Length: 175
Ligand SMILES: Cc1cc2nc3c(=O)[nH]c(=O)nc-3n(C[C@H](O)[C@H](O)[C@H](O)COP(=O)(O)O)c2cc1C
Image 1 (spheres, rainbow, N blue to C red):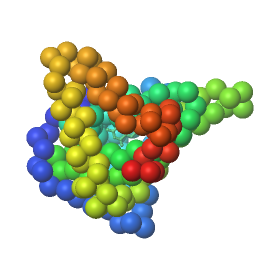
Image 2 (image 1 turned 60 degrees about the horizontal axis):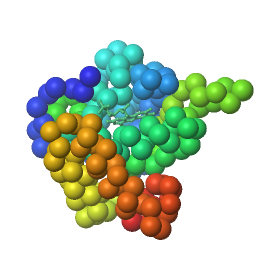
Image 3 (image 1 turned 135 degrees about the vertical axis):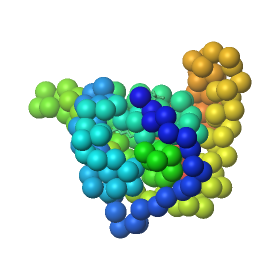
Image 4 (image 1 turned 30 degrees about the horizontal axis):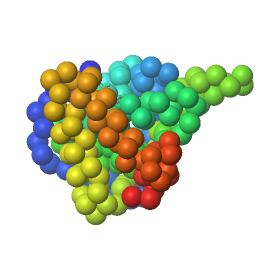
């Protein structure tokens, strides 16, 4: 369940020497969050372990980005993503996330793992914020949330396709 606290509009920051780390099961239920994760998001370990990772979900994040995110992980690929997260108190913080599946010895996916660093703030404000706003606008243009998400997803794919085919990561690194 996303955290229902009202947004404060206040951005908070972590050190560019730090990594925010979390691990989930295959359903996106939190198994672990490191101290930096807990400190910036404002939760105790007891409050997050066993909860869905969307406890951090911020309403400015396009649904279609999470669709691609999960597609990559569920087929066994790693993915990079810029994400704005919501703290327990309604503040927010931007991260550059790298997420990977973990496999057992037979190659089955048994968990997911994400490390996040401080993103380039100019790239976020000049490129990612307008991109996500455009995707959210498409998502909100349909009365049916799923139809809106599919429309935004198709738009995102149309941005990636011409030069990078199906490769979201390559596209992102060339933005
Ligand atoms: C390893 C891993 C890390 C994730 N990290 C975040 C995160 O930092 N913020 C976030 O909003 N969702 C994160 N998610 C995605 C959530 O599980 C969820 O798909 C997303 O918040 C969208 O939620 P919704 O389906 O309720 O819209 C992560 C998922 C995995 C597997």
